[in-house]
Length: 145
Image (cartoon, rainbow, N blue to C red; front, side, top):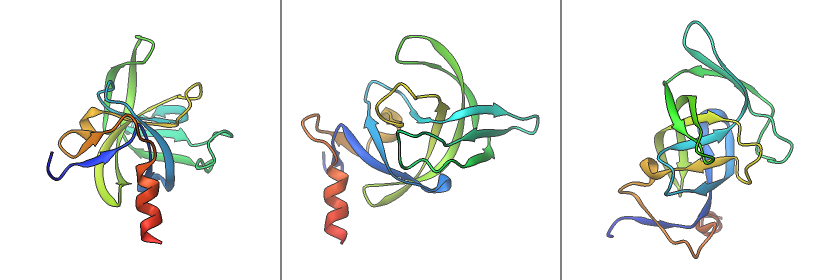
């Protein structure tokens, strides 16, 4: 357990490359990978993925149209059991005061409470989840002020 940070079931994460700061994220040890809510996702002939960060519910979304290099197309089983082909991107994130490079799949999560899902691959060997806690990252932010 030494060296691993304890996180709650919901936390704040900033996706630096997308200028999304303090985004609410669900920690999901049942999910293999990370997922981010976005709309109008398409891949062009040069392997760039285009998508919109526009959502009235989530105030962190700024309405920008984003174009980034496609990292990979992968098949993902969604929470309802359907297999989807999703575009993924490689980004820098800030989580619990540290920066990490990670892969995020892009999908429409409009029906979900949290715009971001953090999965096992990101958590592995760095974090432990305390299911009785939420937003431990907010305590860290308060300590910095």
